[in-house]
Amino acid sequence: MKALSALVVGGGTPAWAEPAATTLSVAAFPAVDQILKAALPEFEKKYPQVRVEVVGREFADHHTAMTTAIATGSKLPDVMALESGFLGRFAISGALEDLSKPPFDALQYEKLFVPFTFQQNRDAQGKVVAIPTDIGVGALFYRQDLLAQAGVAPRLLGQSWESFVATGLDIQKRTGAYLVTHARDLKDIIIRSNLQPGEGIYFNERKEVLVESKRFVRAFDLARTVREQRLDARVQAWSAEWAESFKRGTVATHMMGSWFAGHLANWLAPQTRGLWRTSALPDAAHAPWGGTFYAIPRRAAHKPLAWELVRLMTLSPTLQLSAFKAHDAFPALLETHRDSYLEQPVTFLGGQTARALWRDLAVKTPAVPLHKLDALADEIVNTELDKVLSGKKPTQRALADAARMLGQRMRHSA
Image (cartoon, rainbow, N blue to C red; front, side, top):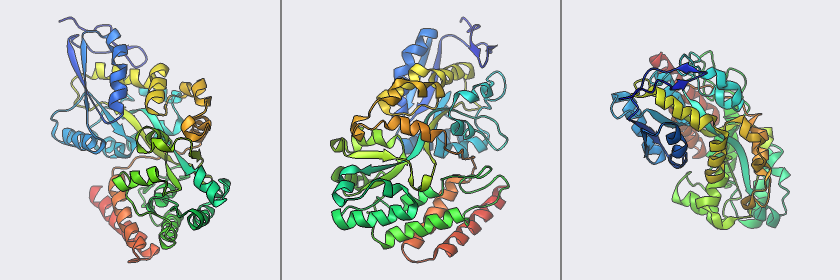
């Protein structure tokens, strides 16, 4: 077989030889698998003898399969897509290729990306373990028709978290609509907002547990107020009831990543076209919410080709914009943010130039350092919040219990 002697990675460093007749395996979740398949003709132009096999699974199934593949070394793909919320456990495990070293030299690309997203792809030693392709910028979505019916000015939603909750009372009184789908929504955004340098969501760089901080106290207290005032619909995210609440207009607002607009328009509630608007989060908060990265497992079989595919998917402005237009995958690549597409009105959002708003919010969004216990911390904190919402515990005790459990796990995992 002929070798790919001309294959180049990183900043022009020749890669090790790779057989031309190769099958490259890529694992992804919706709609990343569709974005990959659409880009394959471009890749095949450069490497016509390379066959790319894209294995798509549902979101949860994909990340479970990748966890199993990493643990067992069986059925490892050459490239895996990872959602930001799962990146920490993979990064800290040491199972992903260090892309900051030769021949990859990924740090040379850092300034090409939205700042916060290229800080989320490091392990505890600062190694680059994945390259971002799309970002999730925390944003508020609200039903303009319900606010108009209630006689409420949209700016009142954003003045402060307290104003947000108070406005919800007016909306419910005059329209019957809930303010949010679940009280947990407030907690999820507030604990991720305006992080200080060296802070993760749950832990800081000094390995201290942060869940008893003012950020968490405020998040729990406001979530409890929302529940006590009966302002949340008490439906779980991604459930059938959750989707139905958007279709029927029984919920007035929702806080999520900017990609949520595409979900609404394409499958959640397309019949509500023109009724939604978007804005910055309340209280001048800035928070990352989701995003996709491409990583190469350390034991991948075809690393040179895998890196070429990763570079194509993350560094091509044309492909990034195509994914944005087809799937609302907001590009991580800064060059795309100058495209006129971002200035165009979004019909689903009543003609707002929403993409330009999200672009401006993206540069103000803080990075969230990864920690291997983030997923566990999320479970523990949610369990304690449920006890607060049901009246079984006060905020301070619930957070103290969460801090104690996380402290124990940190000591055991050290």
